[in-house]
Amino acid sequence: MIRQTQCGACRDGQTLPFSFTMAFQPIIDSQKGRIWGHEALVRGTNGEGAGAILAQVNHENRYRFDQECRIRAIQMAAKLFPVDQRPILSINFMPNAVYEPEACLRATLQAAKKTGFPLKNIMFELTEGEKIDDIEHVKSIIAEYKKWGLITAIDDFGAGFAGLSLLADFQPDLIKIDMHLVRDIDKNIARQAIVTGIVRTALSLDIMVIAEGVESQQEFQLLKDLGVTLFQGYYFAKPRTGALSPVNLS
Image (cartoon, rainbow, N blue to C red; front, side, top):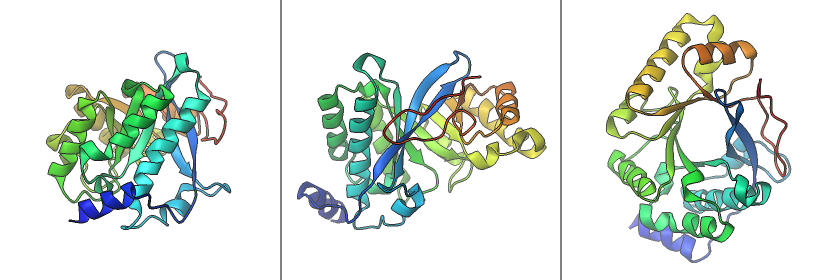
């Protein structure tokens, strides 16, 4: 009943009581020395950080917010990147805000079709920071996304509610190692051991790995030595709204 009510509220045109926009942060492929993709990050229209926006998301409006994030990210990315240069576009989603996977994906598919954004270049990040109420429901979401050729990922891996147990339940295409494990990893043997285990597990399951939150050359080099090839963080570029940030590829 709750799912029907929330989905109906979206279809009936319920509007959000706040405004927001998207900033884009590059994801770097260190092996090829190029930009692999961009993550769409929520920002306020007056420069507010993501926290100020997410603090206004509640049970009543989270479905609508989740849908608006997807559409806005695709629309804005389509304007930033020429048709023949569309990178991977990474979009966060709230697993508990997806009520019916097939129905909830329709707006995404429509936005992609309207803007000419290839579905194979769209990645959805399931944030491990949100407690998952129903693992079977999440598995159905992932299956639906994969059916359409979308890339799936677990964000903030290693800092959330489920950790490695998520990988036992379903295997995404990619995991993003949480920035708290990345921070000062060059000085912390325990973090090195944990990340080594994550990378080895991911490789054995044919899952790609991104290290996010990289802020120094030392962190970058150590993570490369551990086998990570995809990176995101201030060391390479900061998120930017309305334009693309200069990128450090060294």
